[in-house]
Length: 456
Image (cartoon, rainbow, N blue to C red):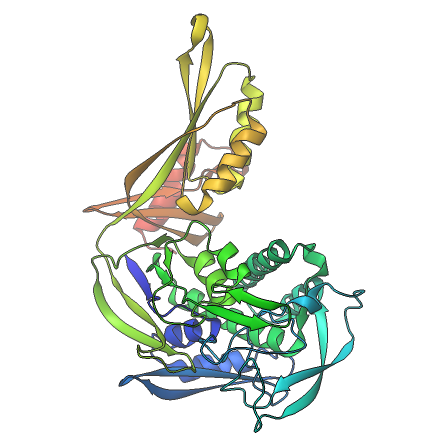
């Protein structure tokens, strides 16, 4: 199966992930031209080859109205940027002065003067005698404006859904971290446009590569503190820490912010698993470079290749109930599947005093544990849930759509461990059977005959 392994030993940022994935494409310049044609307002994108600790890779530069924001993350709300020079790992990332997100009435388009240190590559908590201040006038937009912008981009619907999902993770994290409703979170114009470009590019690249699995290494966050207008905050930033709940992370010894909310949200959204690099035949390697220099190469490394078979760790969450109707159990199962459960099934059991009961068992990924537990408590009458970790072995699954004389038919194909299985979507066969007034088996035979004769 097609496997993408992301080595985040120096954290991750939106532009670094984009650059690393871009290097995996056979014709990166063609993709970059397509990205420029998206028409994100005022945005220009370029790439350059740079070296970190003797390793060459790609650095992505995004400018908005000719200005390269040192805070490219959508969590950029600050009027005043005041950071320790050792605490900002990626000059192309976010700061933590989030006050502008909620400290005034929320007209969604309004201008403010922003004071920035003149030297974007080396910012300090106190301005030195050679530092200068310059004033910019920028607009701030709420989440609804950003969603409207994404809705207007000429991108596939699946990519649009990914972009909005990543934005949603960041907005939720900022909302929780700073105690304000999501709709009151406002985004700094330059940082927001920059982040739209980074997030959209990464989502388009993931669609272009179309991996079967995305494995992410434990993520280094950095250590130390970062200075903002409100005071001194710890690394990782509150929003980053919130996004990376239930994800393997570590601080390390490098002082600085190595992982940003945008990078964290992209990893959280696309990862199918976290851990060590799987056994795989690597065919391509990409390096996405950050701006800052450290004793270790400041990059995300993307490794692309093939792994033979697939296994992963999943959780089994179980509970026993004896006071729910069949309809109520069925409704709970629907909600659990909608909430991300991999499998939900029931087993009839005997309970205390010989009462008949039902064992409800849910399989889910570790990242979805809290959501599934909350859904179990909300939609069942249980007062306790058991958890067990288990490894599952699965076949690689793909769904293709066949254009037949009878209409489109979806076909599921599962391969691996020396076997291949095909199955046609029930609803599509049923529709053909209804139209032609034949049985499901006859409808299946019609489609298989077309396949054997290579009609489609």
